[in-house]
Structure formats: C-alpha cells, structure tokens
Picture 1 (cartoon, rainbow, N blue to C red):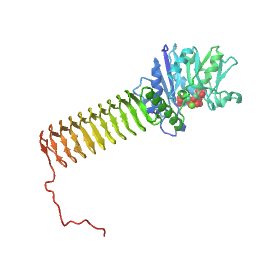
Picture 2: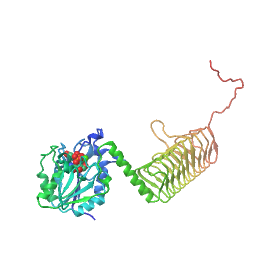
Picture 3: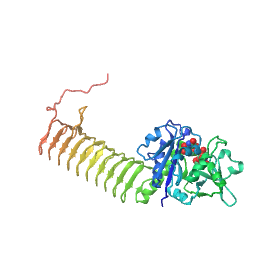
Picture 4: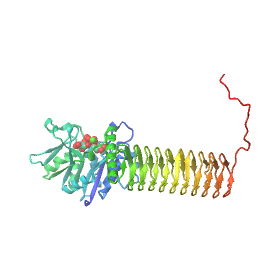
Length: 455
Ligand code: UD1
Ligand code: CA
C-alpha cells in the first residue's frame, strides 16, 4: 500500500531540556543512529513525495547532520507550539496532498500503524494510544457514539477529562486542503500560551468533518524520548526486538538481553553469539560462525565456520571461512584473513592480507603486509611499517617461517619458503628457501656474576 501524494512533516525543533545536554535532542543516538534518522528512515519507507523537517533549537546542527538526506528544512525560530511548527511547513505542503505529521523524538515508529491511519483518514486522523498514566498527554475526547470531538491538553483539561486514558500520540494525518486552513486559524489562547496543533481536531468537527482514530497497541512505537532514562528504555526495547528477530532467523544467543546491534547484522544458519557482543554498522556472519563473549564487530564480514574467541575486535575487516580468531585479537581496517588462518591473542592486524592457512598466533603487529599461504609468524613479530613519515609494505611469501621476536623493517620481502631465525631484525630482502638471521653474534656467560642484593 502506498498513499497518493503523501507529504511527511517531522517536528524536530524542541531543545529537549530534560536530556541535560547541549546537543539537540533529536541528534541523540538510539542503536547507534540519531533519533531523527530513525524517523527519517521509517518515513522514507512510506514512499512520501516529500519530507519536511521543522528544526529550531541548535540551529544548523540538525540540518547539517542530515546533509545526505533529500529533505526540505524549515526553521522554526521560536518554539511557539506544535501548531506553529506545522504552520512553518505549511507553504511546502501540496494543495491536493495528504500530510502525515511525525515527531523527531519518537524513534520506534511502526509503519504499519501509519499506513492504517493514512488509509482510514479522509479529512483528519489521529493515532492514539491507551495509557495507564495519561498525565501530561493530550486526551482524546469522544461523544456518546465514540466519535472524536476534540483533543484537550492535560493542562487545559477538566478533572473529568483527566480521567480519560486514550491519548494523542502526536502522530496525525490530515488532508492538506483542510490542514492549511486550520493552521491559519490557530490561536494561543490556552493554559500554555502555545499554538496547539491539537486544536485542529475541534475545528474539523466544527467544519462538519469526521475525525478518525486509530488506536495502536505497540506502545513503544509511539513513545517519545524526553530524558536519558527514556532513551535507555527505548534502546533496550529496540535491542530486545532485534535479538528476537535474530533468534527467529535461527541465531543461538547465550542471552538475548546481552547483545547490542547498532546497525544491521545479517546471519547464516547455526550462528552462535555469546554474551556482551556489540555489532556496529553492517556486519555479516556466515553459516556456523561462533562469536565468543565480549566481541566488538563493526562493518565486517566473517565467513562460514569461523570461530571468534572472547574479547576480539574486528573493524572494517574481512575474515573468510574456518578461521580461528582471538581471544583478544584485533583486526583493524583493511585486514583480510583468508580461509583456515589463525589470528591469536594480542595480535593486531591492519591493512594486510593473511593467506590461506597462515598463523599469527601470539603478540604480534602486522601492518601494511601481504602474507602468503601456510606462513607461520612467531610470537612477538613486528612489521616495522612506519618511519615516522611514510608507510611501507612487508611481503612474506608462501610457506615462510618467521621465528619469534623478529622485526621486519619495511619495505622488505621474505622469499617463498624462507626461515627467519628468532630475534632477528631484518632490514634487507631475505632469499627464498634459505635461513636468514641477524642477531647479536656472541653469546657470553660470566661465571663469577652475582645478583645484586638489597642494601
Ligand atoms: C504533544 C501534544 C499532545 C500529545 C503529546 C505526545 C500538542 C499541543 N500536544 O504534547 O497532545 O499527547 O505531544 O507526546 O501538540 N515541537 C516543535 N516546535 C514547537 C513545539 C514542539 O518542533 O514549538 C516538537 C518537539 O520537538 C517534539 C514535538 O513537537 O518533538 C512534541 O512537542 P512536545 O513539547 O513534546 O509536546 P507535548 O507538550 O508533549
Ligand atoms: Ca512530548
């Protein structure tokens, strides 16, 4: 279903005083993404002909954070109320269109309920929700036949009206032809001295038009963020839902309450994820991948059958099939690990290829290196890739054995099948098939030597 000539207006001018932050509220992040980005993404899925965002507090900070989006930005210099905010957008609304009003601080929007609301709406439609504690919200006033008569804001409501538990979510659909006229007639003659958008409901009724309501049962989808506690609450709801979807897709999660996905996580069959893992950006895990506890994986792909042990960090790297990583491995941008390779504890790999079946198992730094197949890199090996100004590459060909505690001073090439003796500092190319070593020549022992004693 898509609505003909749908305009979407997102209200995002508020400061969000209770966030206790200098940053405009809608820039705060949920699941790694700005609140307003969540709303924009959900809005775009409704296939609108245009999206208008009303911004205010924080000035250009909000529009400039979304420069990549195709959006009409409208400034509301003073926050004089939700009606005043929509009025600023009014000139951009198509005369024959329908407008859906969304709130920039309501991030878990449910597109389905928006579509149902739009489908029902002829002149004006309200998305409503029933609240056990409705204090603070605008109440939906209905007549004896359940027809909507008005929205009365909490501060303006009578004691009897305050008992009403059906409230305005703030998500409203309206035919532009009527909306534009109503907006021009708003006044601020109320308890808060604001131009209330919600006054258009009584105007519609006075015009003899039917106001429809759609009650949502997905409470989180209409919950706004007003404080850090609200933000944390919605974050947990979002993460619980994401974990649910992962399990639905077949993932085994050690604890669905202890996984965080800040982006998209795509999984194959029989993936297992232990507690405390964070996935950021776009991550893909192939069939049978096992992720140990407390791993952080960002914008990376991990091939089938690979096992990632505890506390491993993978950032903008690719790992092929049947590898073993960690515990405590760190793959930085540009690390490409081929099938069956091992990267062990306290090994950092950056902008390097590690060939099929090669092993870098202990305490090493591999940067700007090309490592062939079946190479063994001994403990404590360092590619010295940086002279303080420029970076150089190290090439280690197939079947090389690098002894422990070796420094490879780039640019340098270690030929196929070469062996480098432990403790070497290699500054020149090492020929294929030979043993190369470069260490202090003489090993001496002093028979008379005594350990110092405490004075
Ligand atoms: C509003 C509704 C209320 C509803 C509640 C749901 C009105 C008058 N009241 O109340 O019926 O139950 O939302 O949360 O509409 N904003 C602007 N410019 C302004 C004022 C607000 O952009 O001048 C934005 C805010 O940034 C926010 C949204 O509009 O995203 C709602 O504003 P808020 O002040 O939270 O409205 P409430 O008084 O809570
Ligand atoms: Ca609010």
